[in-house]
Image (cartoon, rainbow, N blue to C red; front, side, top):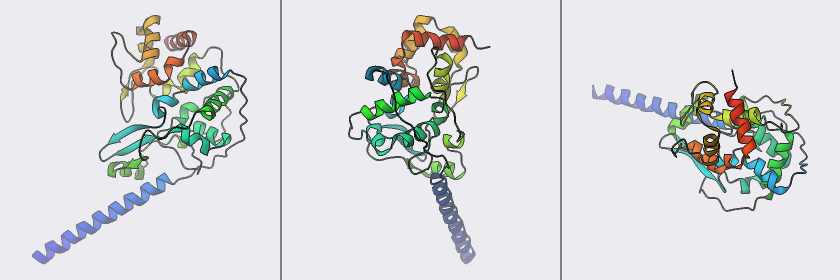
Length: 273
């Protein structure tokens, strides 16, 4: 009997080891998957003053994730630690065409996908705003990393990768994009597509890996114009409520919208059928 138990235990250990090795191998295959997206030529030409180029660039949500020199987006035992890298150090490693591919397609310099990069939204960035964004990135003074180390995947994260459950937006963005050349005069819909829709739906709540985001149309309708400006500038809800991720993103990014732009965003959200 003892011998039988030893054989069964050894078999179970062997099965577990095979499963662990298999999950690790599959997760590594997922992380090393490459995308056939060419880094098309992109010439940075912007006639905007440096201050306006920076203002437009900052409205496109870079700071909310990356902060000034890198930021931890997720740190959960078993799942892993996901780091948004230091852009002041990363940008000089890419030429302009490679930066455009990274931003619009979520494809890194080596052809692999960037996890949790909102390329599905950034695919909508117009050429003139992309030029402003890259010009701003090129102007940044290089800073030491604010976060030691990079992204690391735990056992549960590895299982998610092996099962293809971790989002890589490089899977969703078409390779043959034709973005608009110029930023629209009324940025309401444009801001929704480049920024807001990453976290929010218009009419229904949207569950992400980290939080539940409310539907934007009823939210925008429930806010006065003054309170909506306060929301985007400070990330604070009515009564000064802290709104977590929204508060952080607003304070890093959305506070750079002008009054007119905020009015256009609210008008677009409230007039949707």
